[in-house]
Length: 200
Image (cartoon, rainbow, N blue to C red; front, side, top):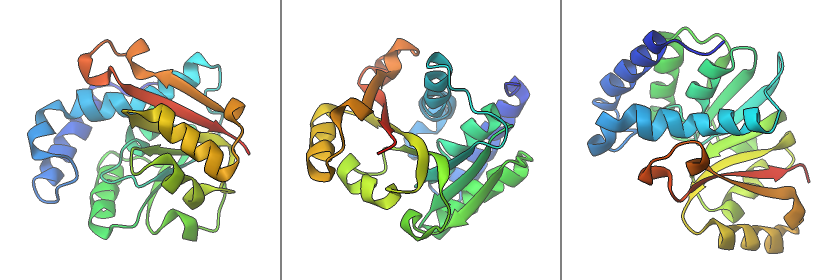
């Protein structure tokens, strides 16, 4: 069941309120929270839908470097049957993410103030939104996922993919690239992608 407009409106209200206290989204971008942050996060949901892999009950996601809850909170709203762990090493960002989880009554999401590599668990999916270059990110989560990584990134992603594959011997065939602009026809998304890295 998809979230209602009222749920999204409440999420935007809470993000705006908290962002005024603890800056997790650029202040000049606050008016575009839904378009630039919620919809961008939901590109992962759209990709899973298009590839016929909507998560089943209990399927688990680790959101690394969640900041104020992106992409984890929009995905937890979209997939109430799945479980989400939102992880960030910066405590004040987890305060915001946790306030959103509690304020929205999301029973399928927990927030953890930790570095991803210190977590003892493994997950079906790792998701993240442009926290660093792929070759920096990969060692943090290697061995922590059963199905794959879904990474939101923009810019010259091809060179990052080549570096990742060379540095960590990731087979190029296990990396897939989906342009978000195929779903969201807006200049903002013209060079943004969902990068899937399959199980190694």
